[in-house]
Length: 361
Image 1 (cartoon, rainbow, N blue to C red):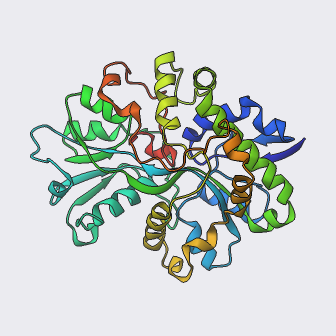
Image 2: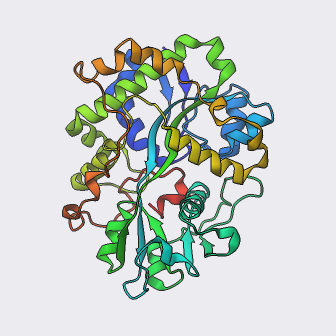
């Protein structure tokens, strides 16, 4: 067995990673994957650059500027390509859509989600740099990084800020939007944002060139684990309920909700979408001016996944049928029939990109 590291940037990744590990797919390919540990953005950068870490489940934005400064960071696959969210407001706010945020206070949490909000609104004619709206952030970030300043005080969910009148609106995903609705807030459906988020397969190009066989085995295990997650829901729900306890113990209904919400948006073939890459690159440009010196595709090496796909490896995991690719429909787990069934709990999983946005999503 070869031992490799795959630390996560957000504990939400464990919803998937616990299932992959217990499915035995990595072990089947001779890998002992050390995945159950969190890592910060800067530590991830240092670990990947030094090859001390074989893989990492992030970072999504800071790497483009790093590439311009000589980084060998590379992405080999992508698990989720969209942010599915709702706009939460008070019923008497007069806000009926995104355009009505103009001149209002918007709540934000998490470095990447805040960038998502900035981009989403800018693409719809509202520019934070023109003071079209005021952003109120729940935490501080270390200068020059995307890591939040550590604090013992956990902020409330963003929808609670809306309810309390601290802000006028916030973008939240499920299950937070369901809890907000139960609390009497107005939930407005909005379009998803194409975005590189959740667990990405990040590594160092030097490691890839030196150990292509480990890369192939790792990707095979990941792809088989995703197929297990999608094809064997009851077993996956059991694993999620038993193992995903970072925020508390789920009941069966909560675990099933968490599974459904992720399964419906997981990429079977690990391909990123062009819109997702384009959008995350726009955020990279805002975060680091050096990102303008690189073509965003320089960081994406999909030939390993493509080779497995062309050989029929992925389709065979789905009974020989062409595996589903990008998902355009919203998760069925956002439907109204579950809003009264899932009681509020921090244990319910989300597909956030960093732990700071757990309160958001």
